[in-house]
Length: 76
Image (cartoon, rainbow, N blue to C red; front, side):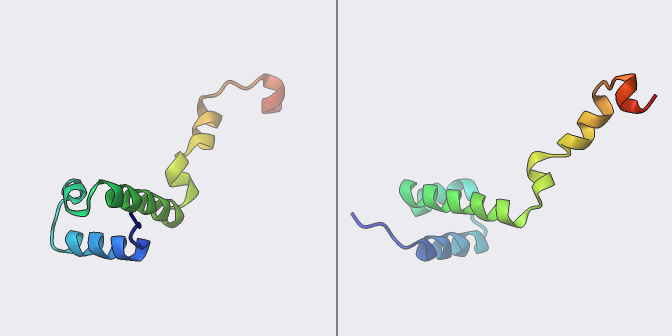
């Protein structure tokens, strides 16, 4: 069985979403295989659009505030 092109899968998914279909119901409309491909591509696109800090959180800033530093590291 030949797989549909990614552009066709995305076009169908966007059409259904524009009509107001809930994303959870897309799996039944697209089919399991096409839904998995669409979901994977949506995650990839989300990661490309978002800044790195929104994916990993403000990890470095929190560690600096909560982490213990020796007096020598603080400059005393």
